[in-house]
Length: 77
Image (cartoon, rainbow, N blue to C red):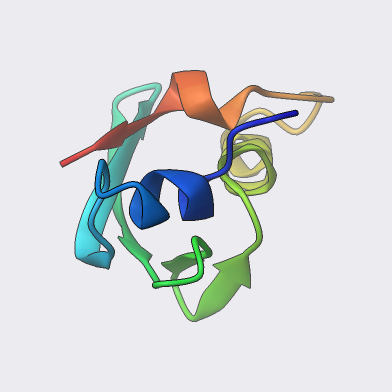
């Protein structure tokens, strides 16, 4: 079974809130809000998990990216 951000929130390891997460890619750093259900919110859009967010964000810079492990790309506070 895969661990989710919701699991980490429920365990008290991660706290939801504005700018709780960050990601840097090719000299661009963004801060991401985290809601209590473990969803990521950035630029008015909601993403169900870190990989969906990181893949979509990186494709803005490098369109040929096919997949990405969001847990390796995104950091907490």
